[in-house]
Image (cartoon, rainbow, N blue to C red; front, side, top):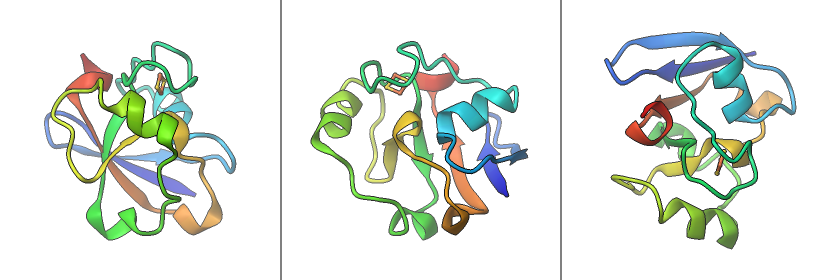
Length: 105
Ligand code: FES
């Protein structure tokens, strides 16, 4: 499975995606910028990514905890998500996300 990650320079990277890993872990394992300071505990917003609008509807809805933490991020958009709260499934093979200043800062 693949995860397609666009960096802050607009360059797209194809990263190997492991089943049941979070998108945050996959990006970090792919040696792309991912601060993820709280280690995936939904407490820091430094794993903030933008999800390609074509994929947004395929993701599980945000829990209240994710929404509250995301409020601490910069330049939040309608397609903003916390990468540590997105778990890779076979349905998400080819998911496209874009890094933000939060995770790359
Ligand atoms: S890693 Fe901290 S909220 Fe995702």
